[in-house]
Image (cartoon, rainbow, N blue to C red):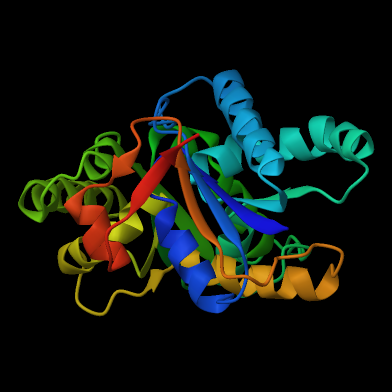
Length: 283
């Protein structure tokens, strides 16, 4: 058995890297749907279909549990798959199977509250708002998932999403820090102008962005806290596996990397982040 990690491209490696650190003995299979990346500008039904196909492939590779290391897939496709596809799929295979996302752990980290918590609506005026900027793909921003779900739990947190349409494709293509920095600076300036001041905290709401987190730190005011999705996801998976021992993570330390795109070595940007050269097999 193994844990599957799925993303439209290499951004999910940021989550995968943290999971491998936390579960050193576990077996992992990573699948990048590079033939269809990026997902951020695709229609919702297409995102659902592509995500389901990726999950099916990982289950075929022996995974019982799949983590969607992609905000767009988590925000657009996850609930549909859990409600309309997974129940029948479990019956067919007669084995445990589940798909988890990264948005729930991120919102728990941003609010300091469990997902099940919903704030009691009160008419009192909030004296001081905590301003949270979310940098994401256009599809994640358009879904307003962070605004909706955080507002359910914390009325003293105001969310401003900033769509960054060009960033994930540039990171996927291995763009240099010199090319990426002015783009990131522009998005930070744009959300700051909309807010009227700098945000108090920020979420890098696309896993590609974690690969260049230092560029976001440089663009934001010094000391601005970043809510890191890989850490939040790893923490949540520890708790999930404690509650669900039926999901076996394996114990051989297997690491496989698959892609629907071009197999072989990845970009120098990705390899610098990962720490060693990475070679992907054809999915």
